Image 1 (cartoon, rainbow, N blue to C red):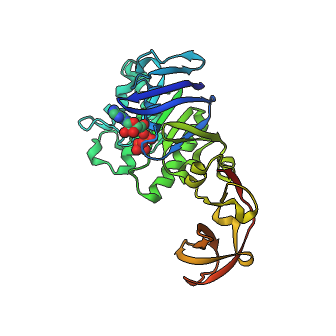
Image 2: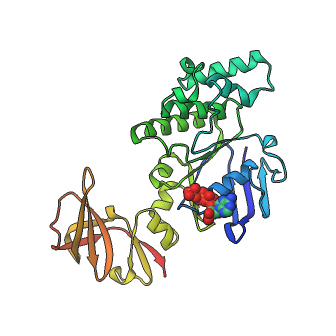
Image 3: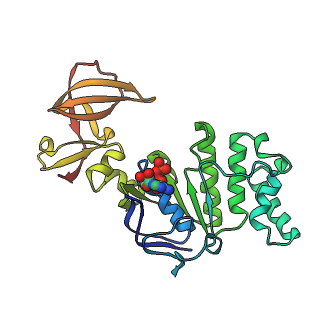
Length: 312
Ligand SMILES: Nc1ncnc2c1ncn2[C@@H]1O[C@H](COP(=O)(O)OP(=O)(O)OP(=O)(O)O)[C@@H](O)[C@H]1O
């Protein structure tokens, strides 16, 4: 099912949380809404789920207007940051609650299938407090999937999980999404996670959807200073490369060692297989990835192999 937002706006009192957002997420697509804290991502997700009433605009699921329908009639499932499991119900009861309208045979069949798939089959009789964080998260995913939703909405579902488990959980989400071809809208403020998961990314800043595109496109060709900065570009005066306005440069496109440019090393951070070198160049800050560790205070020569003109 496709999900479409047309000129959607939402305010809370004086706060304009979402400003005239237009977006179409295609059937089966994994779409990531990426943005800073408070940029309106959760509000958009909750509006699609029917948990918020929008002030202006329209929301369509499979080309049908749904923004006046209650959550239960939208065929969407939402996974929240805190997993939202019922603490006084067993895993089995947690999984059966969303499908309690089905008869017991079919309910058990679905619960069996999904719990085997997510490796929680042996935990069905336990209570959420008796599970590890990763297991709780898999139960929450199972709970959302057991309804066989056509649209899957996820609000930072991995934020409470430690890094190694997070990568595994990310793989799992992606795998299920691909296999079941569920239209997914996934909210995060982590651009690495966004780039790893998304077919397309939409960048939210300050209530506005500022850019939509494939991860590689946005990463290399951000359309404004804010998006460029968010994706890790240094933004410097275009005069350096004989352009007007500002230009964005990724650290991997700054080659330390040979000119034509010169800068002073302000700081060096160890970054695993390389060093992140912070340079000062004509009063601008520029970051470079380098295989060798330069000295702080040293003047170094560098070249820029690629940049993006961002305007003023
Ligand atoms: N119920 C509410 N009442 C008042 N203001 C709200 C409410 N919910 C959200 N806001 C405000 O609306 C704006 C957008 O919030 P939203 O939660 O959508 O942002 P977000 O991008 O999801 O942020 P985060 O990544 O921190 O969760 C923020 O300024 C927030 O303070």
